[in-house]
Length: 494
Image (tube, rainbow, N blue to C red; front, side, top):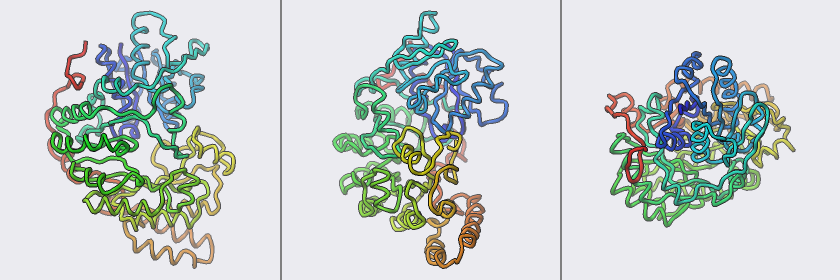
């Protein structure tokens, strides 16, 4: 059967590994795969139709859901196909099956439910009893039980993610190998979906592939696809110390590419930082979240102290690893003082790059429930922006909300030029009115926007790829023939 995956610029800012895993499984079973980016131009319906899909596949978050439903409705006015939605949103909100034009949703991990459904669909057999899939057949809702999480052994039996799925998109030129060594996260941060996800299916939520299996994929990416840099996508790459002690020395010897990964400060120590550095880690992403211990620990349920953040950053810099600080502005209970403290902590911790996101109350998370109960959030999903946002949801109530938003909009300017921050921290309390404070900050926002046009040259703290990656993008691309599905033990698809 012919399956067309639908993406947007947000999902294609990196390799969409979930869809790529599913694509590899389907290709290996003989199904035909295509992909379209609906943000590439207004003619996306025509592009989708040209792929002649039997199945239209959307992997959607809550913020992408309104766009993808719109695309699906527009397409189905001109073309008859079966529309299947998977990903976080339908997993948390299976009532999405009632939306116009939605034929099926996948709840939980999608590799095997989708394969089983397609095989039955293609053979003309009843496909409506597949575990992990819910259906809307001419207005009749059919709900099936979820299937267990893919276990450790079965993770190693999956083919490697289908890199061919992104060949026609700009992300291909970056020559970055996006890899996930394990699935799931054991922590219960209130802003995250983990506490919901672990209850959607039976079995172990936190799983890890074998060292041999991950090394085999990395070698495949390096030798076949000529990648220059590895970006590990695990929620917390350093979670299992025993695995790290086996994996990292082998990575340094057998792969040897620079890489980045996600870390937690409370798992960081001298041994771990040294292992990462010796293996070739050049960048770690760290959830700082907020500058106030009370907000970080009690509201965000991230039990990490400011002292632990500072100590971890110092350790990484000691071993030549740069830190990307990940932060949220406008969480429940946020104040002007806590917003400033978040920026100050990033400056004191010497974070190399900063991500400052305005908090969005994604439904289903504990923090969204708090927002609805105590901070006025309406629950309207249309308030949640699809792309990088620069303001809070309209209905959220916070004291000094306008000031908090303006300070957050200046955050990259402040971390790029700390003297501007220290001056602002002194001046802001002395300005006699809210109007003057907002006027002053708006001037800084305009300066930031002008500097942003220069990218890293204007705002060094804004997220950017390593220089050698950007040089590779500008250089002549290697000739890489189209590849078949990759595995630890290579074999052709049946």
